[in-house]
Image 1 (cartoon, rainbow, N blue to C red):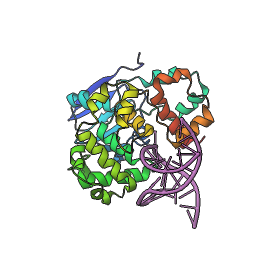
Image 2 (spheres, protein in one colour; image 1 turned 180 degrees about the vertical axis):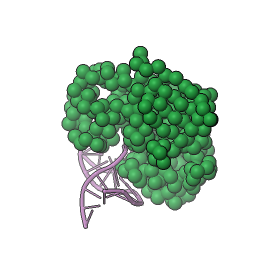
Image 3 (tube, rainbow, N blue to C red; image 1 turned 60 degrees about the vertical axis):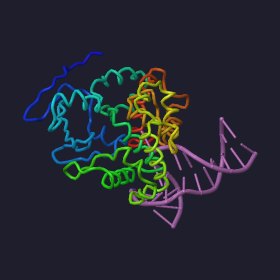
Length: 280
DNA sequence: AGCCAGGGTCTGC
DNA sequence: GCAGACCATGGC
């Protein structure tokens, strides 16, 4: 686990600079279908909501700039959020014996698997079912505008499960989420009542955690896998959406190479990107 | 215009 | 366990 460049953190004018990051692309990471609320802003910046904070980030020459934050906040929240404790170049190297994966990682070696808030992730991927990314973003935006709190710059916090638990599916009509509205309410109620307990899921092994999430109506294997991967950092999860199913049939009819299995979730992101941009 | 979308449920074999 | 209809909506 060695890095060619040393990681260092520097605070200046209330901003934080983390240098020595050798694998990161903000567009590939923030707009690759794992998170739905990041927007490109001026000067190569990206703005998004993490918790109750509007975060502006940019990245150049191995240095990530987090605006208006502190070293404490970084260690507590953003380090895990951007998965900066993981050495992605060593993962890419570990699967480089497979020529298809070399191709798949070639154009998107800067993708990172974010660790997002479990509730937001769950809700987002319930909305994602049989849906396209453009519209998923719109529904989530209307959800936050309607039931979240304004937190500045036109951004809204993600409405907590407790708040949505008090509503009915009809209350979500303005979102135009279609048949997914009743699933969102069911999820909110079970999460608010801890009938589905995130703290417990966090400690569970992958299979138990998946079963636990599937207690929610509208959550099947694929949505559960997305939540485990993008919300709980369980990288053995391998969500199979229609793109991945097509790609796997064409590229790996006998399943992932053995070498890739320990990082299945991360490799899944490379394959997803490859299937959507290059084509299969 | 019609197929498709980071699927799941329900029914009927 | 597995196929097929059906689900709301809008992107392309």
